Amino acid sequence: MTIVSPFPNVEIPETGVYDFLFGDLSDADRDRVALIEPKSGSTTTYGQLVAQIDAAAGALAARGIGVGDVVAILSPNIPAFATVFHGILRAGATATTLNALFTANEIRKQLVDSKARTIITISLMAPQALEAAREVGFADEDVVILDGEGLAASGHPNAADLLGAGLRAPEVTFDPATHIAALPYSSGTTGNPKGVKLSHLNLVSNVAQIKPLQGMKEDDVIIAVLPFFHIYGMTVLLNAALRARASLVVMPRFDLVEFLANIQERKVTYAFIAPPIAVALAKHPIIDQYDLSSLHTMVSGAAPLDQELGDAVAERLDLRMLQGFGMSELSPVSHLIPFDGGVGTVGVDAPIASVGWAVPNSENRIVDPESGADVPQPTEGVSAPGELWVRGPNVMVGYLNNDAATAETIVDGGWLRTGDMATVDASGCITIVDRLKELIKYKGYQVPPAELEALLLTHPDIADVAVIGVNDADGEEIPKAFVVAQAGSQLSEDDVIAFTAERVAPYKKVRAVEFIETVPKSASGKILRKDLRK
Ligand code: 4UW
Image (cartoon, rainbow, N blue to C red; front, side):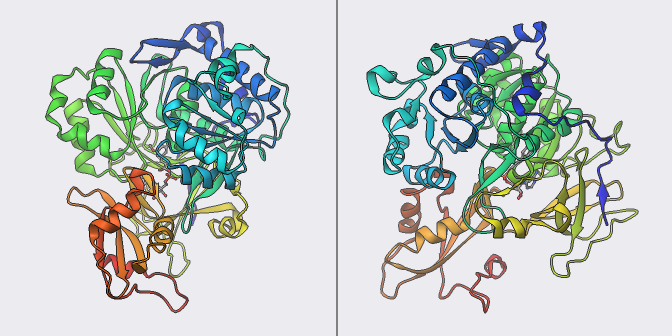
C-alpha cells in the first residue's frame, strides 16, 4: 500500500546545485548577508559569496580539478566551508565531507575509498590531514590549509592562494541526474561506512521538496551550529537556507553559552538542532538568563525527539517546535512536520514526537520486515510498526563501488529501505518507533558497530565482540561493547573504552562494556543483536 505525500508536487528543475541556488540571484539578494562569523563579526554578502565560489571553482579548475575528481573537506563550520563546498560543485568535481573530529586513520580510509585527490582543511586539523594525505601519496600542494601560511611559505595553498588569483569559474557540462555532487559516508543498514552517491538532481530535489514545508524566508537569521560536513547541515544550511537567502550565523562547534549569546545578539529566528541540544534547552537553568524571543521556529532531527522534550522546549522558549526525519541516502530529508504543524497544509496537527509527512514528490510504504507484506494504513488510530520505505527524487544514486549494498537498500521499483521502524496514521503522518538496522547514533552522529567490532578484534585480549546501541541513564543512545575476553586475560571495562578512545573520533568511542561468555550468533555467523539488546 503506497502512502503518497499529502503536499502538492513541486517543480524540480533539471539543473546543477550552483545554478539552482545562485542562478537567479537578484541585485537585492547580492547585498543581503549570507554568512555571519559571530566571533569576529565579519559578514559575507550573497554577492561576495558567489564571487568567492566562482573564484574557488576557477582555482580548482586551474589545478586540473573538474568532472570526475573528488575533493575532500575536513573542517568545522567556517564561512569558507560554504565557498569551497560550492566551489567544488561549481568546478564539476565531487565533494566528500569528513567529520572534523576524525583521526588520521579515519581520514585516510575515506580518502582511499573516495579516491579523493585533494583535501581542504584548516590549521587546527592539519596534523591529522597531513598524516593521512602523506600515507595516500598526496603532494604538499594537494593539501589546502585555508588559514595556513600559503603556497609560497609552506607548500600548501591557503584561501588567499585559491581566491586571490581571481580566476573565472570554468564552463562545465554534466548530467545533473547522474553526476555526483556530494559523497557523504554512511554505514547504511549494515557494515562499514560507504560513500553515498548524491547527484546534483538529488540535492536540488531535496531543497525544492522541503522549501514549502520549512517556511524559511529571506529575513530569517539561522543559527548554523549543525556541522556542514554532515548531510543534515549540508542540505538545510549550505543549500536550503542559502537558497532562501537567509543569513547564517556560523558556529564552528556547539557551546551552550555561545549558542545562547549568538541567538540573543544576532536575533536568530530559526534553528535546526539535534535532540541533545533540545535537552539542554529544556533543562539548563542558564537558558533563562538570555533573551531568546527572536526565535520563532526550531526543527529537530537526526535522532528521536520525544513528545515531552519537544513540548518542554516549545513552551519554555515560546516557539514552534518541529521534527523531521532524514538519512544520508535520502539527500537527506524524507519527512517533515511543516511550519504550520500541518493544520493548514494537511488539515491535521502533527504531534512533535512524529516526523510529519512524506515531503512533496515522494511516497512511502510501511513493510513488515518478517513477512515482506505491506502494513495496512488504518482509517483511524495508528498502524502496526513496519520498516519505512521511501521513493522519490531524493533517493541516492547508490553506494560507491558497492552494488551489493545498493541492491539491498534500493529494491524493486526504486524503493529505499530506511532500516527504521515506523507507524503511520490515517493522515499519512509517520512516527519512528525503533531501528531495525545495526547503526548506532550518538548525539545524532553515525557510529557503525561493524567498525568498532573490527577495531576491538585487533586487541590481543579480545576473543570476540559485538557492539550495539543502548540507552544511558538520560535516555541517550550510546555504543556498548559485549566482550568475550581471551582466557586468562585481565582486561577491564576501562581498558576496552580507552582502546577505542585512542583510535577513533571521540563520538564513536565505546561508552559501556559488558563481559560475556559467547557472542550470540545465527547459523550463518551473523551477530544476533536482538538477543544482546534483551
Ligand atoms: N527520529 C529518529 C528522527 C531521525 C532519526 C534521523 O546520519 P544520517 O544518515 O542522517 C541524518 C539526517 C537527519 C536529518 C537531516 C535533515 C533534516 O531536516 C532532518 O530533520 C529535521 C533530519 O541523521 O542518519 C540516518 C538515521 O538517523 C536516524 C534514523 O535511524 C536514520 O536512518 N534518524 N532522523 N527524527 N531517528
